[in-house]
Image (tube, rainbow, N blue to C red; front, side, top):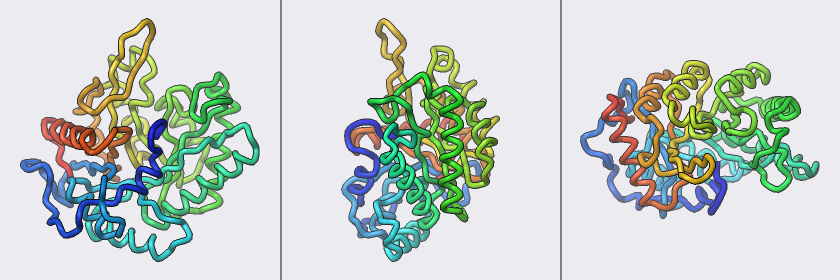
Length: 319
């Protein structure tokens, strides 16, 4: 979830690739890449300074060693361009992981709430049209000043019931054939734990409702920080069959007079990436793993290199 600086949609609209004329070579020699690799992970992330044409953008992802991508910036009404992106990414065997629609579905203003619901509905329609694995948003917040911020009501029945109703409305309006709709996990609102995700999946009761896994968002106590291996295993044990896309981040404990966890570049924190990657590689539906929330190409390169190195050490290959 994008919370500061350039939002994810603007970020992706500007990410249009490295020159298409450059030959596609893996960025990580010595790492196993292959379309049919067993127990493999599809890693993805944004691309900086790439050409805007579909083929060039798809090639730019391959040049960076990515086999998954965020949805390119394209209008739902531009059928020809949607088809061009879908075809180009399919030719390069790069999966479009997700369409992000980062709006507050529980906004206190009724008209804004209606617009937000429509934006997410259109996002799911775009995901289905372009072949993305999912459309994802947070369930929303009752916080009056922050669209994603904490509020006591965010953990109550009112939030749960409204989130279930919104998910059903979005899915029933689109009736997607292949894309799923998901709520990203949050530590202070539904769904705030693996068990909460299970409860929400069962309550929504739609085949097109999936799980978007972002384990760092679930770390909201010292116990979960110290034993995030157990948290990861619980996520995969309880949610594995529903997971359609994942985020790759890391957490460090910034020492002050109260508990403060801070997102950092993967490898600079304490998330058990060996367990995360091993469990992810075992899922038959091969959910993409998407790097996010970093600043600039250098930080994304550091994150890519760490994830690949951690995967290699854990016996995990990358498609």
